[in-house]
Length: 312
Ligand code: BDR
Ligand code: CA
Image (tube, rainbow, N blue to C red; front, side, top):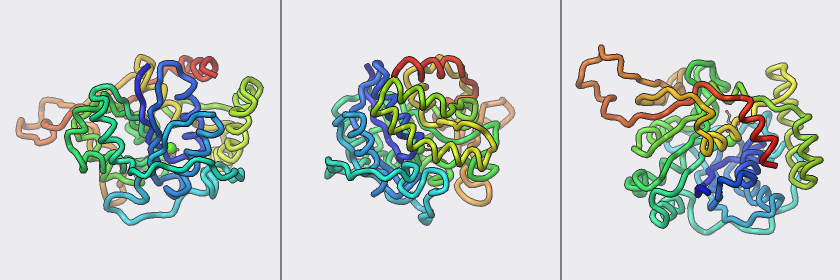
């Protein structure tokens, strides 16, 4: 099994993704690191602990960034994930506490402990990863791969025409993380908008796994209602689970590769720019020095849905 750190802002689809990671025998989850995004970091940290309790897993949770690197902090999207980030379903307080070390420091420590062995799957804004690189730039050489759920290349965004939510929340961090030198796969809306689940999936899950399935079913109703209201579709995109799938089954995804930059301000803030060397840009183009990043553009939808059915 591959060692995973899941950096997350739970978050309804984050909760399913975390459950998938524990259910997939190819994955060994070392820890969760929390970040602001779908709710405040205080709330997402508590939610991470609560999700682990429901899953009966006791890996540590390291609390991360409460705001973007440089941009002013913004309101959280309660209309998507609920005030509590878990679809407004009241939750008992988690029995465990977060660790007394920051997410960024933990990422650096873990990379030193297991050089070359850890995959970081980032399911929220990339602030903790940018802070880890700032603490110790050599961390990028010690991580096996970063899989980032975020962005949109050939399809419109979901917070603006230009941008997807995780990138929009902290574009400066995304630009730094995509250019830090570690192998990066970006799993954005080009593929996550092709993967849809319906309420029937969660009904089945509850039958198979009464406790975990019931929890996921309950919290996902709010998310389904949001999709019905905003997109007029019956079902929802479970963005973050696709990133978990890509981390263990890259063969299910088709990639475009090149230097990847992120627009950090203005009305197109959060837009990804993938530069593929077309030969007509002069050889002193500074972007050519940047590392190549893989961006997922196609996905084997059947394989993902089969995976979702078989891991639980
Ligand atoms: C991403 O934003 C959040 O709302 C989801 O949890 C997912 O990580 C999708 O744009
Ligand atoms: Ca998320």
